[in-house]
Image 1 (cartoon, rainbow, N blue to C red):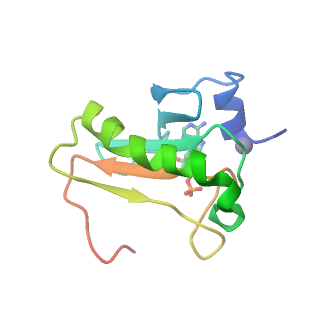
Image 2 (image 1 turned 135 degrees about the vertical axis):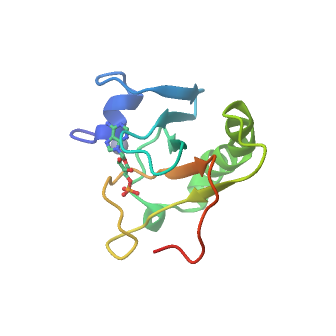
Image 3 (image 1 turned 90 degrees about the vertical axis):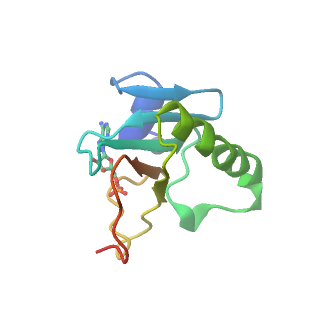
Length: 113
Ligand code: AMP
Ligand code: ZN
């Protein structure tokens, strides 16, 4: 997708600090980390947000979710972590390419702000 910053990272048009990559997903460190570990787990396919996810995306979504624990383990998050997906305006989504924030190495707060 033109002008999508995460597609550009997927396509190696701009650099990302990549933590994990396979044929379906990529995970890279957030530019403005909100925790000692903060990576974004992103499907390589351009899906704008959770709003657009359908049963056609079952394979990629299942793949992504099944990889979370492996990425977390690789990053040393054996004490736990938080997985966040911001969706739409009220969800404060700023990048319109579906992504999951994996946050760890600090105690999270609940409820979130
Ligand atoms: P969201 O607000 O859920 O859409 O999150 C977008 C996230 O992408 C923010 O945490 C940004 O800091 C992060 N971000 C934006 N551009 C980049 C980039 N080029 N590399 C890494 N993280 C980025
Ligand atoms: Zn994209």
